[in-house]
Image (cartoon, rainbow, N blue to C red; front, side, top):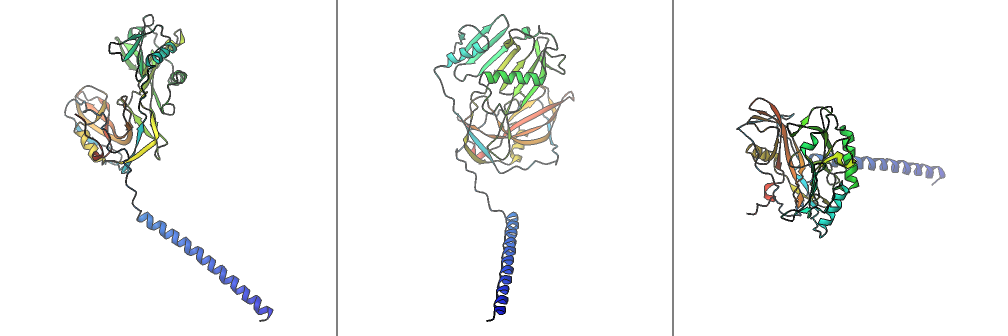
Length: 367
């Protein structure tokens, strides 16, 4: 073979090798594209829900307190029930840890809130009660859970001038600073949402008012959301969707400074989540939950005590139920919200909860 023939042979090998490589790359690309299209059209079945906690306890959702015989209607953006995933996460909660230092911890809290004395133990020995007669304040601490209620009498609040309420932003910051100082802004509440509204005493009763110029205090409610568990964050809602398990009332112009905190309702001590213990459970069809709501099963917030003529549901979403009483697992719920029309034709807010876990994974209530 001459040198020229050898060189030509080498060039042919290089060309054929390059063509072969390009062909292989194209075939591999076509294979991947075809496989992707096939899997999109024929996705592999998901593994079944893990259901690692076994049957779950029923949520404490009592019968709906609805007056009258209202007509229900569905008025979502599509005019139909939304579609949800076939499963949801259930998260274990941290069991409460009883302590022999409950009374001592309650007294330490009382000192931080400027209450003197040793407190009085309730007859059932469950609560330690502190009184501040001068400023009309009372502190009641559950010595087992360390949940507590600081309150100021309406008669005391009625002496405050109108317009003494701080803005929502200032009230929220004041409440956050106090809770952080007390080590109480935890269990996911630090990263959760807050709502505010203005209140004043009218006729001996505390009512919501429309502007800061009329208000004697600002109410701050703290809520939390479920994060770092699923692909999206879900709201965690207490029995009253507007009243957080942590609620603080704030005013201004009172000395000592701590007395500007008129109320702390703290019911969050038994809500800590163990995000290392998460299982998935099948969700029941939302149509089943919708039928239960119409049959008055679940729990509802209704903006009136009057008889209702109609209930119009405009939104349905998935959330989680935040029970102030210890619950072993944080479970999902369906939330139905919309408007109700009362007998006097007034439109009021309507929100109802229904358990979302499939019924066969919910244990029967113990008698």
